[in-house]
Length: 153
Image (tube, rainbow, N blue to C red):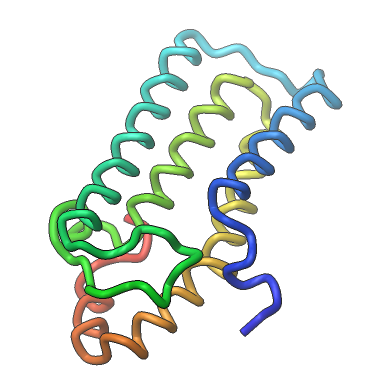
């Protein structure tokens, strides 16, 4: 496993990305754009992102397992119900929506460029290591789930 895998908590990754988005928006103000309703869109995306996160955590609580990605050894069950029927990673998808809302709020082109960087980082250093652990722990049951439900959406 790579040295960065599972080392930086997802919330810290969001804060770092959001700060970088803000930083680039201040460093290159010429790439700012104006979009009517961008603040409302930003708030809507943020609310949707938070809702996905809450739904994900709620399903983990119902299954009496940990939602903490830094404590994978404590995972006691495979959660495939509720929002997990549509996305294997609704909490991470929620974080992406929050960052997308932040990008619209900043109204800066470079802020949007950092979104795929965040997604690629999360996929490589958070999601793939989690998937490897889940495959070892839940075997065929997890493989069936992988074949049925997409990683993001």
